[in-house]
Length: 140
Length: 332
Image (tube, rainbow over all chains, first blue to last red; front, side, top):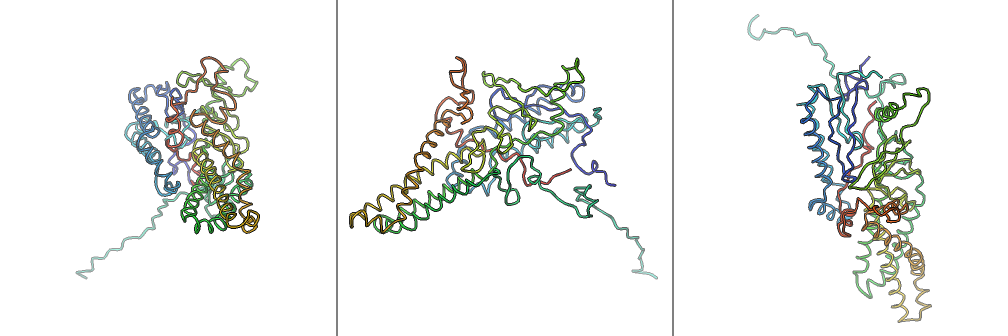
């Protein structure tokens, strides 16, 4: 009998999960609250966690900004009757890939050694940033 | 034996490397085949998917085919009858401009109808449980009764208090400006309205295509109407008007279709121009969310301040990719 938990890279449903919610104080742009959750106290430093969240928010901020690059990209796509979108990745998609790489790197170097795993918000529909406590069983 | 006789038998043990995990173990009972299911096949909303999940539309899309046929038939008649005459007697630029307009109209129509309008994926069971847990804590005095999770949460967006509503279907607190479409059974970000003419919801991801569609369609309508009139008048100069109509009956059909549809299309284009410049959705405008009637301090926190900035944000702002991952595989 194969143990599914051993082969999937996602943690099982047995661990405690903390959900970092979206911060809507500046509008509907993607941004997560950087309040330090009390369950992480003692596992990781507050400043480290906040720095991770701030960096993630910065990348999302870049993606959502109305810069010259976004403007030119949209105008160019419009001129090709939006057929250009069939062949190229938008700047937003590139930023999302950057977030994914950043989170993977942070997990590998900082969080997983302390028994924590961050889930890329894109896997949760950009609703929330899930933080899994890997070593603790969920006594529900 | 010397020399090459250095042969030693290495026991060959077959090494099973199985890099591809068994996807659905429960189906082992049915057969020993692995079955891969794409996420669009198990999508909880009422949308219909085509082309292996690449195209996403509402359940009832009959009127969309009507829209398509009207545009294609009218433009077809235009190219077949009026352009033939006008290209020769006026300028060949007329069919060229017509072709460019037609391609733009169809492209924006297909983009509006086939793309994900900004559907918010439903919450995972853990998230839903977490929200329920947040409610149970204050309810310790009545453990037997079940109270549904709180319906609203208040946030302050740029100084304006906005109530976030809880969606019982999707089990999430809807972000600001999102709304649940009952026809598609999804929460959609920056929900504008559900348009039966395009067979899809209009939301954050496809609003600009919808706007450009109705704008270009009104231009196309007026263009065809003007060309038809020019054609008939030119013919009437050589002959009388009745004979001109008899020689080109298709022009009458086009003129009628254009005349009756242009008013509503221009009206809609004007209305959406107003919405885009004030950074509002149809939903917010109808509810009067940001009018001064609701209170002196009521204002639209999403507006960028100026008409040009609002337009640029709506039309040239960043495009979020679809959050649904329709063609991804379901991992049990």
